[in-house]
Image 1: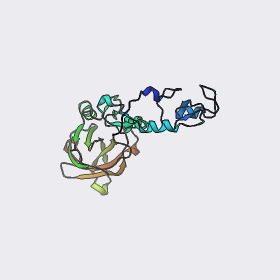
Image 2: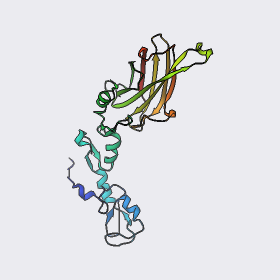
Image 3: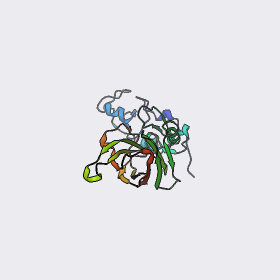
Image 4: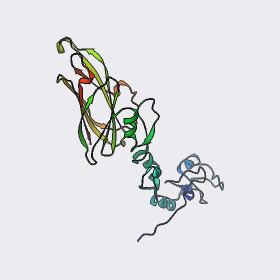
Length: 263
């Protein structure tokens, strides 16, 4: 049975900047250590403690092995995370992959920050978002949603521990070419999907809009890389646009069929 040891966090701090030591750890010829950032700055200069030259004389391999073997509680332990993380990966876990990390609201002008578990209720209560949840383990789902308003609508989807936000706008009515629909008009609808998922996540999304008269239009994105917390006031290149052909279209006549698949 392996023995367990306790370690005072202060003993793992760089004596120059007080940041936590992570490999590579360098030392002068007399054993005075520094973190990677400090050693880069003082690489060819003298040791601040004993004036030995150069400061980054050699690697402290023994301490590097100790640091690599250490596991510590997550920085978000106060929010509920119970994972024990490699000491050298603690910061990356806390900001990139932790289920309890702080997320920013993607809606412009909103300053809300909170963990992933409270984000869905924030969007529903503050931004009147439609919230849809999937049972854990389900990675592909089709949703049917009524769209009763010309104003921007938010749809938040919780699927296999990932959060997706879809924003849909009814923009205007635009004339179609005569040869297409005898001078009828079409509603221009925009949608954009942003994700609170990890950077390596890829997904497919497809939206079909159907009018009361049975006219439909479909558009979507395939093999899209997730991006975190994108502000929705993005450029037109970030939107997937499509037209809904319908005589005098009314938003309260529309139904959305949204299919989301995690790859």
